[in-house]
Length: 299
Image 1 (tube, rainbow, N blue to C red):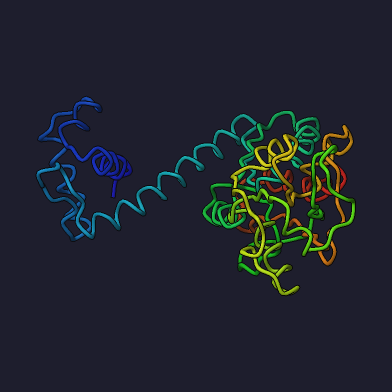
Image 2 (image 1 turned 90 degrees about the horizontal axis):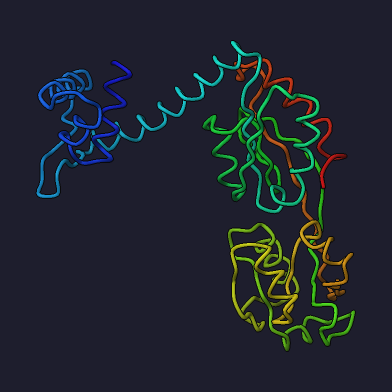
């Protein structure tokens, strides 16, 4: 099975047109059709069907496309690793949960760049579940997730901890100590359910006999920055990770409240594949260094 055939197949699947892909790649349509016929012969199934909407994938074609996308990602990573060997450099891909990626890991990257100037470090933020898949699928070399994982094939070690705080604008009219019953009277601005803090908070208030439906939740937002901006503008209170609000607390834009019964903290873990599964020895060395310094180098 030729790599070129797989790449062209994937392009046809996306474009839904053999003629368009043929023109884009400067080959004749009959030649491209013959290549796809050879691919179908190798697979043993018909991959395409024609319809009024153009080329459609058969069930076998859909399976082929799923693995074609994965294969091309692996091939791209392979090319990067080969270039790394040639240039004694490379790209280290790091994925982290939004709070860790936005407020903790950036400072670690500066220390990494000083230690390994020949590497480029790419940091992406996403939910823990996606970080896990990125590392398992070799889309990321290093990941940071909330909570541990028992996923086989991965090293998972605690890196640092943080707490979740109830905050209000510095001049918001609310006492420093508040019961959950009193909290029901105030508007709450929440992070959405993709954030680990949302799930941790829900679990704790349920143990106290409450549910989110018992509170005056104004809205759910998809970033800590949008929640902070809303709280600073005095639109309500919010539960936020401390590392996301410590600057605003220091600048006296926000104040931390003591909510009776709420005592939330969480652990952030570093994950990466076992050394025997990592082909690039340079990446292995960088990973070990990250594991060693991250707890003392976060912002």
